[in-house]
Amino acid sequence: MSETSLHSALFPDIAAREAGLLPVTDGHSLYWERSGKAGGRTLLFLHGGPGSGATARHRRYADPSIWETIQFDQRGCGRSAPLFELHANTTAHLIADIEALREHLGLTHFDCVMGASWGSTLALAYAQAHPERAANLLVEGVFLATRRELDWWHGKAGAGAVYPDAHDWLMRGVPEALHDDPPAFARWALDAMQTELAAGAPLLARLDDPEHETALADSMIFRWTAYEELLSHLEATPQSALQGCRNKGRDKLVSTALIEAHYFTQGCFLAEGQLLDEAARLTMPVHIVHSRYDMVCPLQSAFDLKSAAPNASLTIVPAHGHAMSEPVFKVVRNVIAGL
Image (tube, rainbow, N blue to C red):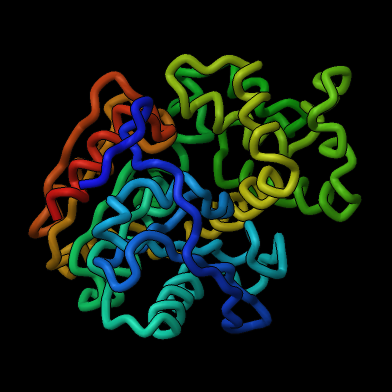
């Protein structure tokens, strides 16, 4: 096994060995890349959000002397085109995109399909649609796209009961009747984001300006993502959430908030309970990693998946939140090493 960094459980930084832009359907083109060993065991990494895009860090989970890591920017985000496009952007389209990429790369299957957060949702949906294409599943921060989970995230009785200050701030300028109606709030927020983006998202133009911090709160795009940042880290503060948004940059901030709202207003384009109802189709080993104090995707969903999938195991990471960091990196690395 290659040596990992002295400061991280992840493998050292590695450049993409090959990259391209793959035209798919309805005018979309997908940025894709692969790194690691040419002809090695294949790991498909599916990023979260939806809308957050692939990053260089995602190349570092699997030993590059053994594994070839493949990833792509999902529709509407990252280096895929057109950016921020919501037309023909559904879970079914993304599943078809994975198949198009697999065929483009000349692969019969993936040795492992890995997804975190929304990536876990897409990994499960893909594996249920094409079980013969995934020899193993590795899902972290499991999100099953149920009404219960969506209501938890933006509801007063869910995460809002743990973070009432953050929830109150999120609802700034939102009609009072929507403050405890997560589906209606998501629809209102999506309309507000689209109006903001149509105007050029002027409040985000000065994202890095210290003198502009107060004005950023008037942006629904900013508040949506900053609220997620606050919930994702156990010791988050408003300032660390602001810095997290700055680190993402304007385009990633827009794509994450806009595409998340688009998907969440539609139940992620899945039937209610679909991923659990069809869990029997997951005949491959399903390795589940979930943090006990995940405030974005509560542990119950991972627990339910473990019970429903015929060949599943669950590792619970203690004293850890939603955002992937060293405790989760170690578990994920060890799971992949054992495949």
